[in-house]
Length: 613
Image (tube, rainbow, N blue to C red):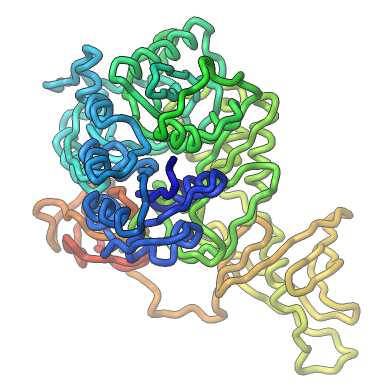
């Protein structure tokens, strides 16, 4: 029997494994980088071991340090979570060689399937060796890992070499393996996968299908189970193929076989020899705890002959600290508050007051709804996200709500190009026009009226806020009957709640303030100073860092005086395990270059200036 598990991961998945271990009466050990010294996963585990450094290559990708940590803490098993070393056969062997139980598939199965190139060869599928114009578009893909890292769609042959280099660098940073390959990119397909669970006694379960078609940068955003609208024959085909793949490599534990479905055909993509981020939707539909089943399989227990029956439908949304309207730029800062209604499941690696740093994936949480029907599950999840309290960096919450309510999604007509088609409309600002007034009234609450006589009405007061990228001015006055505002009647205004009568309808606004950031229901505003700071102004054409990160590359030959074209890549930043291109905003001349490879930058830092011609 396993009595103590070291979780070789961080964040949400580490917390999720700890939760199940606690329910099973198993002691847990966390590992953490210096950046994660006070992270939630270190606080919920029974004990923790430091991995010196902050970069993944120095910490969570150091299998030797993790094995030493397990032995030092007295653990007798290791659970890898997903990402990092979860599909590293060498790490699995090192765990077993140290006399520890590996809660995962046999290293031989990982070797057979974890490399996408070897997996395709096993099934007789060859990657593209030479790419021509006729092959376009193609997909550059990392051979190891997942989560969209090291993936690039190439539509022009001239871009291939640059995208190969960027994919190699991103894959090496995320997985410690820079191998990439090229395969055809199929437009308009759906991403469908099958959850498998196998024991060491020859039983393999196919726990239904999932649809993960809504993706950004090839990383999933919304997932659901079962995959809607699959023809019965195709559903049976992909489940049978998944079982066959698992049996072919002597698989044990939880794994996922992924397909691209186009029309009535299913194209094999890969087998992920680990737990998937989206596993909660399968758990909800089948009523199982996949982490608990992984542990039981590792202990040698046999599965029942048949899996439990499926019930209802489940949908999961990944809540990211990122700005979809700004090329999905990751965000950092203090998460002041995160709360969702009890009607849904929340899996997160953050608690109120935690800091979101620059070193790791920007996913804050997974929100999961389960209901008897797909329509009910979608409605429940959209409503929960709409009502969620999220105070901190910009998130993709509004995008998630709009995606779930989009007619193409509700009708199950989505594919992997959903955001390519609909992103502008889904990110169109739609702020509440009364939010600035509510924020100003809370700010004015309890203030005395200085100057003037009490029987003389006060002059209007004004406050300015930045909301959805635009300045808004709120006007109010202290009248004989209390606070007054043009166009609406103030029913109540105190330190946290404002009620306004708008055309005969009373509307409630819950207001919180953290520094100069104000949250009015789900609308975020920034309080502006009365007099702008002239020093904060930048010259036209200035390129400012959109996020904290590291400059990993500057375009070849780029110096002050170089002519550039609008949209031309000038430099690349790495933040939260992804690379982001910084492009010229206009056609003109580069007049100033402040960035250099290896430089650490903060949001708003001047990187370069392009003067338009």
